[in-house]
Length: 304
Image (cartoon, rainbow, N blue to C red):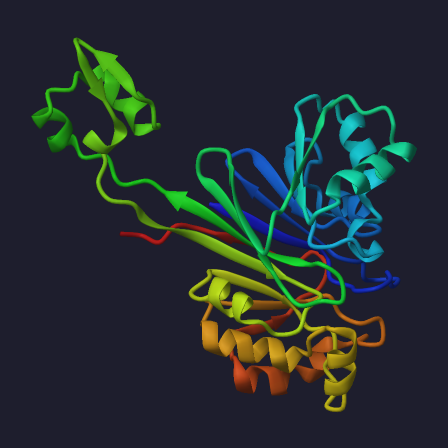
């Protein structure tokens, strides 16, 4: 199962009851953080989740409301006795950004590995089962959305394993993906596993105009998290000028992509009560939610 929590739902600046952008996902003992705006570590403490398991940080772009929380967050991870490396993935220049962060967070007990996204998209394996797809969106600086997919292996087939003459002691290692040499044979996982089963998919995007890439990645997602910067009926021109999206435009993407659910996030500071505009949003896409800080869900694999 995959836990997802929006730690901050604000854009531009924090408000008394709303931190700026951050989303945390937990899977199989590891955590992945998308963006790290001001107040992220406070929001995480309020949630009661741990800093230490954060192995990967994804950065959408380099505006301050998405990265200003990094120095304190990394220092707190260090104070939590983390020593394993942390991978930071982001647009070209992420290494320069992290070097700047280290000026005020110089003593960290773990290595930071920076991965720059080349071109308009990229795919990265996180552990054995998680795969992250980065895709370019349309903001006034280079910005990426992220698809986080949990792959699900095929079901173990006892009859196939027996038919292949594979000793029982090798069943579990093969099920976990190991390749084994035995009596001149190479035993591989595909010899005991059925076809891949439906996994889980979360798509996260902010700070953008509507793009085909968002719709393509959000298609059939278990959860689509999308910016709804503005909700007022007269905000279309403002959204186009600043390369953001209205709540209604986000709903149109969801209507086409048909995710199981959409959470709106990254609200303008002037949008104090986004829920007031949800009637117009749900007329377009009924399964939309005006998310608030701390909203969480646990996604589980479909039963077969």
